[in-house]
Image (cartoon, rainbow, N blue to C red; front, side, top):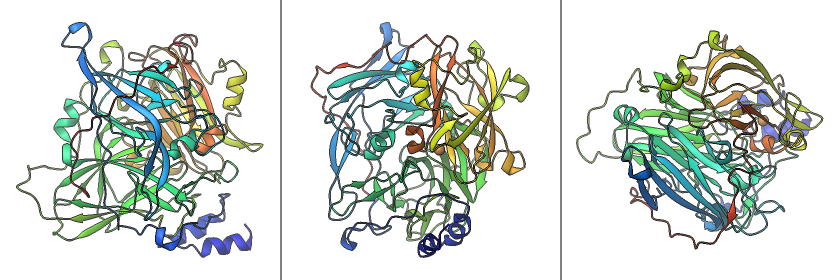
Length: 556
Ligand SMILES: [Cu+2]
């Protein structure tokens, strides 16, 4: 570390700056980049009002073969350019689902299958890259068939449309949809291609806050050019760390809350940044859900670590606050992030008087996720898996080799060169396996996403062999921190998804693009070919005007 760089770091000390300074020595993270925005265009923390993404209604609902036990809902999204006011006094061109960021929230229910028709009405060239503006949509958290799972090379070109099928048979959870196009996923997601897809079921509805008190928080970071356009700099494929933290596309918003218990579905949609969230007054957050649904035991935590694509559902109890009181959601940061003066802040809650008597609610200590949806066919709830059930153990090493991000030395380019036949593993349908994900590098962290599965973290070498307190539920992203090995049990449950090829990759999207991604196949790798089974077709229909549900008042 050069003296100059150390000084630069030292000049950026935040209230949590001691962490930054002491851990920067071991890091190979890129230097901070000064903001290009004029002071008048620089957002001020907590000045802007919180908002929720609009909720999209289906354009058609019905029953397969007229059978009332087989409902479906069909949605349509158009990927197109749009204009947003992210920073004061300037407009920003983005590429989003329906031209907005975050994209529309799609709420679904377990047992109602969905189709989402995604039309690419983007220009021929990317907004932040010079390549064709092809898109691939992955519904993260869904056990979808390979041809609907957003395989990185199953692209939809501008002027084309793909109708994605989602089974929605899993337990209630916070899913999200986002771009997954090979080599430019980072630029495409950063341009705005990301949205929520919460799925409910009767167990979740009976136990966790709903409606007004069920709030999605998409946390991302960005940097802007002087004219308000999105800045993009991944520093030689290391990562992108912006100086502005946004929640649902609003820099450091203030949310007005009632003195009630709120449920926040926290999603990190950042390209590279990871967070350590906590409330500014040290009050606990109650972790009730992880990537794949409710946690069997509710954990009160003072803070929790969360990387790209991880979802944590937390309850915050505002009942003890007086009207006018405020509390902040802060980011204490983690090793190997690039921190700026205000990246330690996320959002602020200001408590207002209640609108009427609240329904009594006790913060639960345990949660019942209900019967596992595929038990009848041999499916086991991920939190009931035990190491003895594993029929295979695999080691997955994430590392930088000769300037390329790799998994066991393999890149997606190697997979491409094999005609997409190269496999990391080939479990049989319904097999249980243990995968040990190792990051032997002290200088990086990698949130590793395994498609298709819900896993149980059974061990972490850095935490006396145990998962962290907040990791007590089903997961599909596994944060492999510096010198960490995280051990995961998973069942390759193909009840909803048959078999075929699925990706494994780092969810630092810059690492994923260059080229930390490989694949496994469940059963025969030739079934459900992700690129030829149901490819995109030329769009022949005019875009449907979207219909959104009535939202909540500004700031709430
Ligand atoms: Cu990575």
